[in-house]
Length: 508
Image 1 (cartoon, helix red, strand yellow):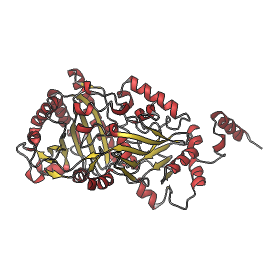
Image 2 (cartoon, rainbow, N blue to C red):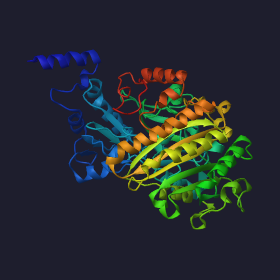
Image 3 (cartoon, rainbow, N blue to C red):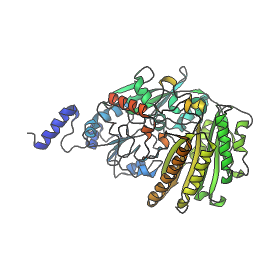
């Protein structure tokens, strides 16, 4: 006989159309997943075990490791993901559970890939790579890391627009835009996607491409993980050999000249083969050099026997710290290894960003605001904070309309554009309030200054955003409305519209 509580739940489930998988009284989402999959093959990892501690601690940022899901689910196939989605549908729709999806765990935005007291789908066991030489493509399962992709492609003389660090996961980059060593020539990472395999909120596994579900395909190119769980992505490959690049460190007094050099090159480009990043940073690790240094990370992606002339303004800066100069001919694996060595896991990590027109005065002012504004952080233990400038060349922005376009809201008429990125790492959670408050204040002052100069561009890059930034809104009202329309069409059960607390939402 149904009691009052049972009856209310029964009626609610009828209204929601989920009776076939209705949660029984007292049953949790974790219970339902356990009943569906069992605990014999290691796919379910619960709190309180050594394996749970290891998996949940393996994020780039401890902001995400601090979040403790009730259950970590490790699927091996798209069918596993579909079965899981069907299990948790009714709980999420009733507000009884949240889910998060993790690929590589390298995006540091709090709550973008983990969830407190919910269920985290960890895709690391889905790491297959299939090369199709006839189609000049490679299909990647969503849990693979870019370093493994490069190790597979490089012996074949092939490249792909992928992450610049070996540890970067595939999913976070292809769904949010993505920058690679080859972006000036090939476009955003997402602009090189041929198709997605995605599990919808219904549990259906579909393909989204230019001719099959093209609206979902476009929405996933920049829309993040708001629309479904990506389980595979097929990407275009190209011939790629070794190239020239590396890092140069120098005193901060030379940074303004490097700003002029990068603005001059991007405003009158001589090639689409460059990938340029210039930074000014304060770090406890730089105390022997005064605490603050300039850093150029520059690449020329075409084969060359000699150091290319286009890089000389950045590689020949004087004075420089010769012992730290790593410029050389390198492979894609070499370049990704070097970028990986400059990253640190298991720290507090905050990325924040904005974008401006390619204007020297604006960028020099941003550097001045940054260096003055972060002085209160100099006493924070083991802190590193940098302002990094990354240009979007017109040649990059010309690719944004390829194969149906993306939803980022950028195009060649915007460019060239400069990404202004604030990167901060520290150890002690007790410093969170000071660090985050300081960096947010610096970002606000840079934004206000650029706005007053008429050089601010209202775009925020998802991979480099903190959770107080309105990424989806920055794509423009038309793109946001399009994303909402696509979400309503494919997420008919509202599984992903709910998001996770603190994560990105299409419906904010």
